[in-house]
Amino acid sequence: MDKQHYDTIETPDGSPIKMWTQGVPVEESARQQLANTARMPFIYKHIAVMPDVHLGKGSTIGSVIPTLGAIIPAAVGVDIGCGMMAAKTTLSASDLPDNLGPLRSAIERAIPHGLTPKTRGYRGRDEGSWNTPPAPVDVAWAQLKDEFDVICQKTPKLAHTNNYRHLGTLGGGNHFIEVCLDETGAVWFMLHSGSRGVGNAIGSHFIELAKKDMRTHFINLPDEDLAYLEEGTSHYDDYVEAVGWAQRFARTNREVMMHNLIAAVRTIITKPFDTHVEAVNCHHNYVQRERHFGNDVLITRKGAVSARPGELGIIPGSMGAKSFIVRGKGNEESFNSCSHGAGRTMSRSEAKRRFNTDDHARATAGVECRKDANVVDEIPMAYKDIDAVMHAQRDLVEVVHTLKQVVCVKG
Image (cartoon, rainbow, N blue to C red; front, side, top):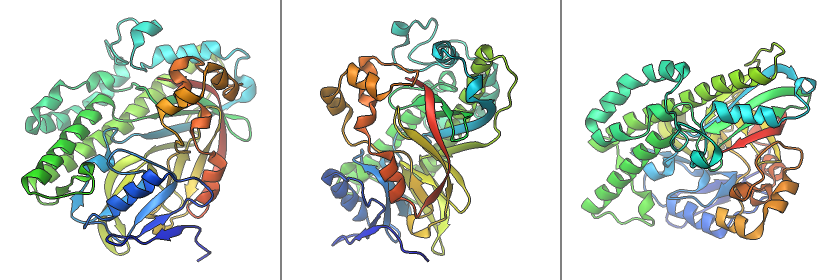
């Protein structure tokens, strides 16, 4: 095998940590958080760390956590199944209108997004959800409803979450919808979202159950957000069922949004075009059972993407930066994983303290997107250099397409 470009950190009382972070900054608080996770007794082999690593809640964003016999719900997090979808079209750059404003507006009308829609001119929507969901949502929900009803029998409060009305909606924060051009000028549609309100409720519920279990059994942890559920217990089985459903909801959510995105674009671009010439739909906050080093283990990817041999994935940059469609190299030392993006270098509050709307406008020049104060925390300078991030993980993936956004819708 060629030389591996990672560093190994041996923890005195825990598993090793292998870090694909050469040439990119890693905050000390993230290193300490990784060391805390490595101390958990059920870690299998080692923890793999991606170059977009940064401090998270419970476990570090940009980490791959293999476990035997236990799951850490806070490592999966509350945005269960958050991930990316991208579709290449037969459109080219010359097919896009000179004024991209109406295209962005059409997308914003077609897909509920954000947290305060009443201030943005939306009628009949409550906090980025549907008032009357359209037909594609009804069809998709029919495939999810029966299993959700079973889950609600065990956890009745989940029935009162925003679930059906959130299907096919974007949310806020760093979730986005983009129209991009690749290196040949081909038009791509790309979006980033997860399981929305119902996933948050499922994650929060089981994180609290895990913490309660730790208190009941007097188990001391280096961080209470590392509370875990042991295999063979009812809470574990219920969580596996619920988190699996939430991950399917998240994937379906992206599919419904892509359907509505394409329909919205067709109202502006009347030239006939095909979509899904190439298509990718991948999670980057999730847990699933996989086989590694001869054993069946649970792999939690918290801000990381599966990169099995030949598998396509998406690594987005920040607003105004590049994004990449990649092909996995199947690097077993990383548990067949790669980064999920560029990774933040500062908190949202720090970004708003350092930068203003003029800075944001300059950084996103040429991109049809919001330029107001409410999105300054997403300014490209708040993220790591995506080129350095990609170079650090050259053992893990190869670039298939390089995308540059021309339209960006943020929640």
